[in-house]
Length: 578
Image 1 (cartoon, one colour):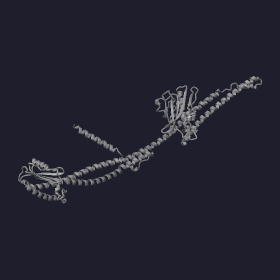
Image 2: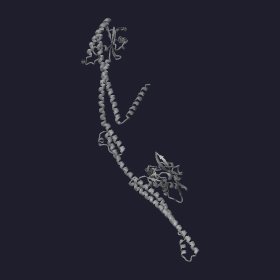
Image 3: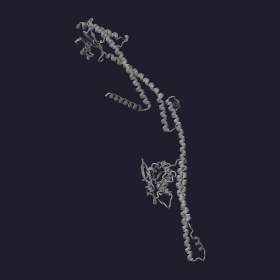
Image 4: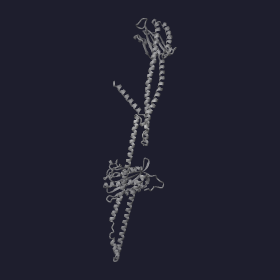
């Protein structure tokens, strides 16, 4: 049971601590300091005011009690003879004479020139003397007087006080209900035995308490004014020493965060010889180190960006060279397979006049067929050379696009996705041992134009198709198929075109999805650098688009999704930018 108060007090302390902690965590530092100073000042003011009140109260009460004791002793000595005789009429006459005498004594003790605190005004003793009684030891009341202002001090109260004096034989002097009660024993002349009567007097202290209250109110006003002055001075000092520098530091950090300009703090703060000065100085050192690191990072970023751009360009040129290599191989095979046959023998026989007529007719037909075959082969070679020229011009466009992007920002243009998909399908290198079918959904022709850079988007879609073809061939799939389709979609309230490039190749493992578009990642066995999809992702994002991939797993094919902004529609129809 004894530990219960300790537990309760510990709980109260913990709650008080939590309350103080929550209060100190509210608002800015300036308001917290203001709250702390105000609280400390209020507590200090309360203690000082309480001490002043106790001092005033004790001083006034002590002065009043001294006056009351002296007046009571004078009254007792004056009435002592009448009490000894137990003569009621004598007691009455003596009491009236005593009241007049105590009025004069009251005036003397209440004179401010004597250095005493006024208790009762002269001529108003009835307001101070609220009860008087002469009581015999057996409790019989010989004489009782009550003031009309205080009826709570009954004859029974006086009788009880008399009984206490009779039992102890000592004087009773106490404060009771805003009254000073004094009871003195009256003994017989020359007797030291039991008292023959008790004189009980009650003096009103409400005037004294009112005087104490008035004094404390005056002290409270003076103390409050002094506290306010001290608090204002402390706030000014704390503002100049603490809050103003902290606010300057806070504004500087906030401005640095918004603008990004690494500016140093004013030297007036950094040169202070206190904790704030150390903080400002160390902050300046940190800013200088950060500025140096930013410069180094910018230099490294420039070099890294140039290297990444070069890697992307080389990767795209490599993809564009694949069809050229295949075309050159086809030209070489066509040249090797081309033969004049026996045209020279037929011509020689036609030149001989001895050749019969029917033989001549057959030779002419044979020669005509051989020439037509040569012409057809020549046209085919011309078409292949033209296609090689298209691929070489695509490489030239890639280089021109890189040159333009280095000198100025490229402006987006409207691009027809159906024509672009057909152009990109030609970038897939064809091989006789593993033919791949590219299916372009006719719905692409009904879609609005996409908004972006045509050369960049050609390289992106071409990359996806080349990667799909390589995945098909790496998986050993004989009937490879790449399907390109698209539809409109609203993303975040914007009109977007969703283009899908789907293949039935080797697919993508689930653990590779998270790293698919990171630089250096590649699923190819040769690991040629892993720049293609990383470059594609950056390029699509630069065109305000999105890219992601889905796959049911390894060996189940993959689908790459391109989200591109739709170009604004025009009244005259689609713009043929592709």
